[in-house]
Length: 204
Image (cartoon, rainbow, N blue to C red; front, top):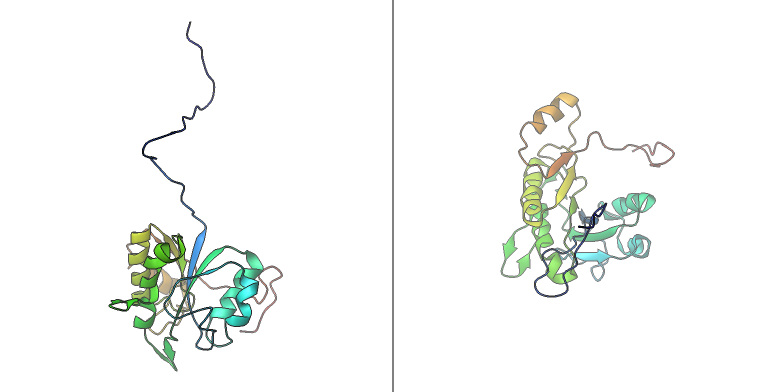
């Protein structure tokens, strides 16, 4: 008489080709800028793994958005984090998207494109990609293209060509209709609290 078994049975492959490997889905990659960051810790256009946010804050500079976003992240969690520092894309009111989007040259990849080298440099594949404060339509298209190659996902705040956040729900809805990427999710409006737990207004 055949024996019955209740539940799920698993068979572990002991030899031969391994059919599937585990994928880390919690690796976050952030594109940020800070001209006064320590280049030995945060070289430009090079993926850098941050083992502890608190340990690198002193090297993140005070200009740009690198330190600000690291501090916000540290209040919430301490994830597996990859940073690509790009040249500051703002020159007064003028925003240069190409500094964020990046390109591929004989010297290597820059901007968002540098994330494609994260596996060979760090042994990690980013699965969540963010680019705070610079998510213009062109930058979002660049993020989406890299997400497709890495099978990653991105959360963006909708902005206009000058990187100014859209200010009405109607504008955000119209913007959403222009997106055709399942890898992109919109977050709007931005948090305005100085304390993500207590809701203290920072005045910014």
